Every structure is written in C-alpha cells, then in structure tokens.
Amino acid sequence: MQIRQLEDEVGLQLFTRTPRRVILTEAGEYLLDRARKILREHATALAEIAELGGVEHGRLRLGSASAEFATLQLPHILQGLREKFPNSELAVSAGTSQTLVDKIMHGEIDIAFVSLPVDNSSITTDLLFSDEIVAIAHPSHPMANERYISAAALAGEKLILGERGGNTRRMIDDFLTRQTSGRTSRWNFRGRRRSIRWSKTISASAPPEPRPSPTRSAKAA
Image (cartoon, rainbow, N blue to C red; front, side, top):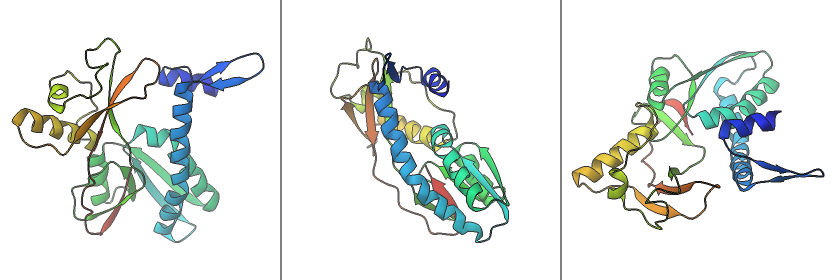
C-alpha cells in the first residue's frame, strides 16, 4: 500500500511487478539512489541536533523549507531524537527558507533545514548535502532534444516555479534577471543526458556562497 501511495505521489511507476518478483524501474532506481544519499546524511544531522540541548529533557523546535527533505529525511531524524531523548518534546514547522531564518532570529524555532545561501551574518550554516536544480520539459518541447541549452534561451521560456520567498526561487529569479539585463550570470546550464521515462532535464550548478560568521544556527538542505 505504501509503495502504491508513493507511486501515486510521484506520478511514475517505481516497480515492475511479476508473479515471482518485483523489479525497480528507472524512476525507482533514481529515487532509491537519492534516498540512500539522504539517509547517509541523517546520522550527522542527528548528532548535531542532539548537541543543541545537551540534556535529555526539553523542547526542540525544528523547521524545514524542503518538502523532499521533510518527507524523506526528517522522519528518520525525528525517530532518532525520540529514541535518544524519549522525554523531550519535538515541534516541526514548515515555511520558505527566509521565513524560517526570520523565525530563528525571533526565537520562534531553534534550528532549520533550509536552502543556501542565507544572507544573514547572524546565522551559522552547515552544509549537509548539495543538490541540482533542473528544468524538466515535455519530449515534444523544442529544447528537449538539444544537448546544450543557452541560459538566455531558458530565460525566455514560461516556467512553473516555487513560491516567492524561498531561496531556490530567489536564485532562479536572480538568474533570469541577469540574463535579461545582460549581466554575467553565476549559473552554467548544461544538457543532462539521463531522463526518467518521459522527462528531459536541464541541470544548473553554481559555486558555493561564502559562509557567514556564527551566532545562531540554521541547517542547509
């Protein structure tokens, strides 16, 4: 039942079922690889979060700006905290990266898993893992068969983006603004060969932002 619900959520078949066995599809292999990478990071996150209180009693308020992180990794973190500190109280809230940073500054939450960069010199960030930003197009789209896509061409497309206020949306908006204004962009787009069944993807990468000086804590996801 859980597998079927996951397939309904992602909109793709993750397993090929036969009378004798179940085989991962290409989409299933991709999701499994991503899940394994995330699980390798959760032990580190558990240890760092546990260091915040230093006691077995108390209340820890967490925030997550990533739906993927909250779905795949955060439950394992919460389970580990509950097992290690059974008498503690855990509270979780969601929001954009900027909203969660503001909540840390106002003392409303203790730690947050957000996207970099965090433009606040009072916030300490720790990189847990890096990820790609990709553009997905239908196979019939003119760009779908191009090996390389210019940033200017992508800037002229109609895009479905996340809500304003999130760091990912802010980075994409900044990228598009730079392309249309003629300024040099920090982003480099390249064609991505691997696809999941019907999708063609274009991936982007950027050099890391400088780390701010430590005062308060936030986690980057």
